[in-house]
Amino acid sequence: GPVLARALLDLVTRCVERLEFRPLRGALRALGASLCAAPAATEVLKRGGLAQVLAVLKESEWSAMSLKLAALQALLQLCAHAIGMENFLGWSNAVDAVMPTHPTGYEVVMSMVVEGAHAHSQLEQTAIVLLRRAGFYMALAKLDGSCARLTSSDDGSNEIAGGDNVRGVVNALTDVAAQLEELSAAPLIPECHQNPIAGDSLLPANCPSTRMGDDLLVTPTAVRGGASDDPFLAHPQLHGFIESYISGRRLMPSLCLLLRRMPRLPPHDRLQPFSPLRRLVVAILACVGGAQFLASDAPTLITFLGFLEGGRSSSSRKAKEHSCLPAVPRFPEVLVRCAIGAPQLATIVSMHVRAARL
Image (tube, rainbow, N blue to C red):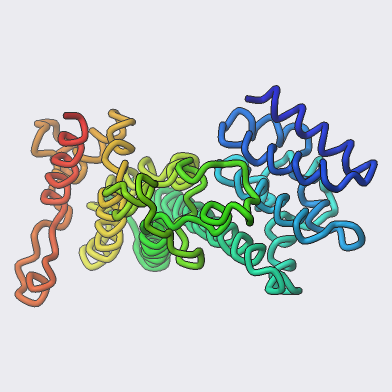
């Protein structure tokens, strides 16, 4: 918890001051293991832990590759939480107070990869995983901002102007959906979890937030009774960091906001954002744990399904205004691609949620 994380962070500080490298490596590994809990990550950020970890990564005189790897793995675990990624990208006021003139964590890791992390393959792989997660979080932030701009263009008239605002939403939705499909791929276990000699992490392989889900990591070997025997691991996973990111960046409220405004867009602009929206929702449902995530926020789910169904379950006038969402396409070319409309998407989501609640 926070108490353990605080003690480990103090130990890291003492080891750096005294240049005690072996205890420093052990402290960083233990710190990374303690950051599985969000309260521990919050406590570390409050006490300037991000700056201390980045200092080890930037040190070129005494910091060996093993120390940099331990620090980078602790940073990866810290950034598995939305608040950690916000600070890593430099989007938090706390970062400005601790590091007013220093580069952000993203810039430090990027420069480390560019300047020679390739000399240590495991260090490079971990850094690339962290950068790809940061790219996914930035895509979610872009989608959040695009939906907000689309709402701000609403002047109260019957129709909202499309154009650049709609194209921004479409690009953001497509980017988020593509990265979600990639990061939720079947979990692949890093080398340090397969080879005990290379053990650079205290976290077990079955810890949800350690499953990096990245094709740059090695494929797990089949071990009798191991995690690879789990049939569910062959399917996409809603990893802990993905759930934290989409919750922190208000993905579902943003989609509800988009669906609420979509019927008031010009007719030729309504279908453009719906296709990547459908792809994103289906990608979430395809993940193990995706339906449970949608069901965890019942009010938002009810609102989301109500907009997709076009007000069929409600007799209010405002609900009926949403009956012009894209229905099942009637053109042969689209039907061949198995496209589905908004009401059918609502039915699919409802079926998955009901099945998850059984």
